[in-house]
Amino acid sequence: MTEFWQLGDVAVRRVGFGTKRLAGADGSNSREQAARLLRRAVELGVNHLDTAAFYPSVSPEGDSRQFEGLDWANAVVRDALAPYPDQFVVATKVGPTRHGLARPDELPALVERDLGQETLDLVYLRQTGLTSIAEHFGVLAGLQEKGMIRHLGLSNVRIPHLEEARQIAPVVAVQNRYGVGFGRVNDAVVSWCGERGIAFVPFFALAADAREAGGVSQSDTIQDIAQRYDATPAQVRLAWTLSRGDHVLAIPGTSSERHLEENLQAADLDLSPADLDLLDSFID
Ligand SMILES: NC(=O)c1ccc[n+]([C@@H]2O[C@H](COP(=O)([O-])OP(=O)(O)OC[C@H]3O[C@@H](n4cnc5c(N)ncnc54)[C@H](OP(=O)(O)O)[C@@H]3O)[C@@H](O)[C@H]2O)c1
Image (tube, rainbow, N blue to C red; front, side):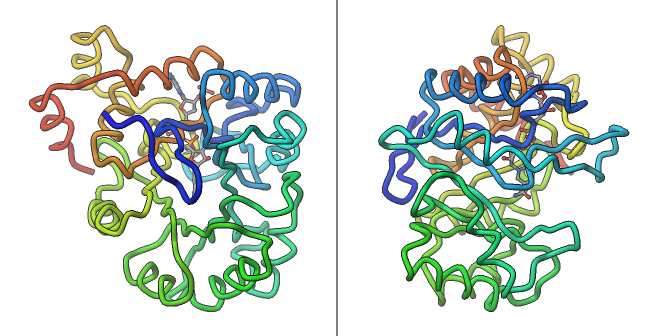
């Protein structure tokens, strides 16, 4: 399995880290615990961090759709890691606000939230409900021209959005939901990205249909496969994710050092073609 992918200027390890779960499911992890976990991730070789000002989040009732953003991940990332190591990508997202999707004119203020970088490495437009992303993406492209952002990505998008965006500015990464038996409407987006050398960065690769409620989605078949490889279901899900193409990057979210280590080891799990086919045939 290829270990690295050229994400903009940096060769990133294909297993990175998502900061959405830093607080733990009930929000009980402290900022200090979160900072320790982030530093441990870097120590173990993670050089692609996926974050957002509105992370971490908790799902108070375990509700798979509702969550509460705690709004501290970017400050913790900055305090724990800035100045960032060489060859490191901090990817952040803008779009969601407590009142829905930001208007285009509201985006610059959201981008300016402090990650301790003069030029942000990678900023995604995380959209919902737009037919055309041109106005929103155009604002981010303008900030890129001014030198505030190095690279741009899009999240929660379809191919027509991506084609529109590429008329405006280069796109280095796309972030949509995707996992074993989950979000397979995105198969076409995965291929489209691969054909154009664009990273596809799936979210909910572990949680799958549990979405915001988190945890690793349970399945007897995955459990059986995991047992045969002396691996865990999370590792099997991540190994399948990585098998979808060299341009597919994993960003598992966790609040636990043990899970972090387990997730990074998934890059070494080589599933047989027959097992990959079996996982591939899961349907939504
Ligand atoms: N663009 C978007 O709209 C969007 C949406 C959602 C997420 N994201 C990004 O994608 C990243 C990944 O998504 P996600 O964090 O929501 O979901 P995920 O990575 O699919 O799953 C995270 C859940 O799995 C658990 N987990 C992680 N590793 C585990 C392991 N080895 N064994 C058992 N449980 C494990 C975590 O709990 P523990 O804390 O117990 O490990 C957490 O509940 C996020 O962190 C965020 O950066 C983006």
